[in-house]
Length: 497
Image (cartoon, rainbow, N blue to C red; front, side, top):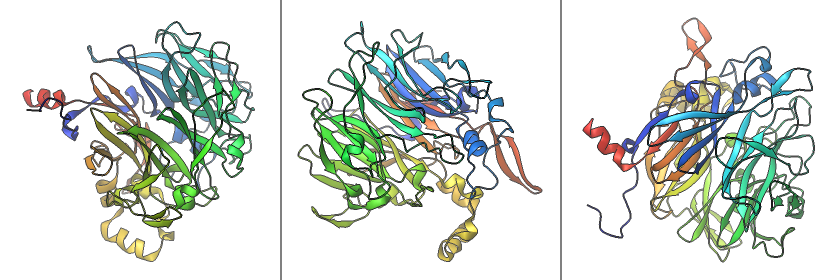
């Protein structure tokens, strides 16, 4: 029995149940890329055929065979991004929106959007009540991405987009702050083969707008905060009545900036962290933020899952840093080091990635029932396709001793961890809830019905499997994103059943 006023117990693996398997029945729904609780229901935006797109347009030479089947013509795949809605009382999922077709520059019909990377609930000055806003990812053959708006969760319409150039293909974060909505482009494609980058944009400016229906966007920051090495503003969050922004910086490491937003855009900004919190380029990107127990928690690492091929950074695992209102900071998970602020040692006792190199990202965080939850991206399931013969000899000895499949079995699948204070951490699952193809926790949503977890799982619908006669592509029933709901009643329900 829990004492009055005490913190509820943290969720365990057995408290979670799968509510949406295999990409809502379609393995091309690779990512549950965005999530929001709106009007008593859960909304999830997907990104489709992400790995087939990479394999068809800019295959990485060090993945052989390509992990998923790629059609000869990528536009033969229906990549129209989807928005799904879940009603907990009836345990019912409905697809309520699918991206329209658009006439492409290739003289064919192409998806207007292939993904929805961000989602938030916000009431702009012109909104009659809180509305749901969604950021989009557009293919190179169509117009730049939009922001979608819905008043009722049934119909979605685009609002005027910020003044970004034609090369911008996606943006990630939608951050409300002091009555305005803020966003920034986080992916560009100049139309040159092999030059598209999901985590690097052609501009590094934060845009802000008051009334989203007229959407007069204004620059809220200067490009890169005055530092050209800040190639992208990747993530934003709010804490202590300030807006925080983290960058991608492949030259010296990420920077963290904050503003009180007074006086309207452009804002006055103050730098809080630099040089990747003095880890350098192995903290190239600040990827997630979450306010918890009077501090701001920030996750950092290397873009593209822990190894940024374009800049030859990594592989390296993720770190977790805690920032206080006075801008002082502590290292919670990571490598001990000497900094201008003195020695920093990981207070949790964990080295990067919870002592696991495969945890390239701490991808998302969420506060639920007084606990901080954090999910990883784990690339161990890529081992069968990597040229491991090029790895250092001592690493190969260990890998051969364990065996690739054994490593994948024990380390494959994301990790979900929980903490009551940011220092003490306990694993909820280290195996993607038993699905090694769930390589990352991409989204969270805390709700009155429990904690929702959305995964990234690119290994569908057809993946490369090694047989006695060689490699072949076969259907993967566990491919595609999954949605889990965690609540303590789930354990009781399961035991009763």
